[in-house]
Length: 208
Image 1 (cartoon, helix red, strand yellow):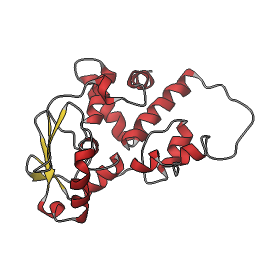
Image 2 (cartoon, one colour):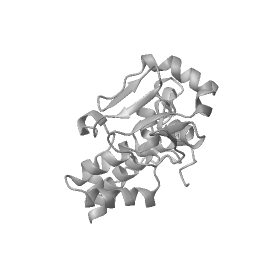
Image 3 (spheres, one colour):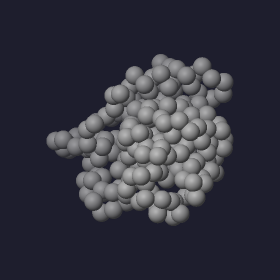
Image 4 (cartoon, helix red, strand yellow):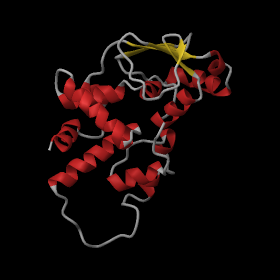
């Protein structure tokens, strides 16, 4: 199951925007983007003019980096978004939000999407009562996310349970703190997602 394994702070610096890919570290003075808010590599005094195509590419790369998706899978999500009824850009964003690793992050089961991916791969998460080990699994409205018995015995589970009360959950999700379970109540509203990239620009990139 391929995914980006390089330094994620470098991605924020390359794209010129803080994407909050490392959870709590992004809010601390240790954040690499705060300390070095310029692109990695040798710096040049000459400013290059970026074409429209280049701006579209940057938005696409920003979307991929935000959700930790490689190009082939991201293109499949785009194809599915175009096939569905409605605005393609909004469909794309909703598909990305309904990924299991993202939902684990949104519910507070993880501090970042990368950590959500790790929790799923370690076999700690269930979907509708069955163990799920695929972070890219796209859920539907009504699906329930919980913890496996193995996950509940882990030290990580105890840490998450202590911190859950202080975490906020989007309105389109619900959480049962007593049983440590979450449910997808509805599709997310685009305004509530707060994306750090423009889905419409990504659609323009792929449709040319």
